[in-house]
Image 1 (cartoon, helix red, strand yellow):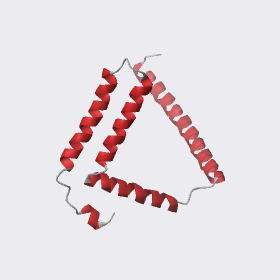
Image 2 (image 1 turned 135 degrees about the vertical axis):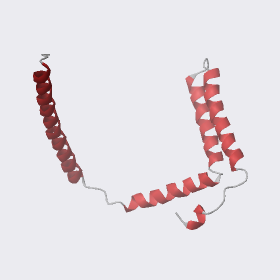
Image 3 (image 1 turned 30 degrees about the vertical axis):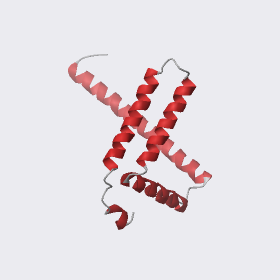
Image 4 (image 1 turned 60 degrees about the vertical axis):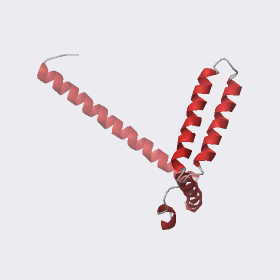
Length: 126
């Protein structure tokens, strides 16, 4: 992120915008509860519209704009990633599964030995 976007002071109406976002989201939750007798489709559409409106308002704040810039920069960085081939992914997955299996056997053995030792010391047989 550039220094210029981080050092800008927040807008004077940002507090009010975030308050409006919270009111809209709370209204979506309350409306979904109040109109519980209505069709699920209508309630879902209403909630999606409320979330979209709240998102659009949130994007008008300084933090919202910086989040959008961050998302765009992240998309650019994802394009630069060198993804593993299918064979590399399968081999890595196999290594992880084998290592997990070996560790689970070791932990099971350790648990059994400790269970036996504690039973031997206390004289309790389970």
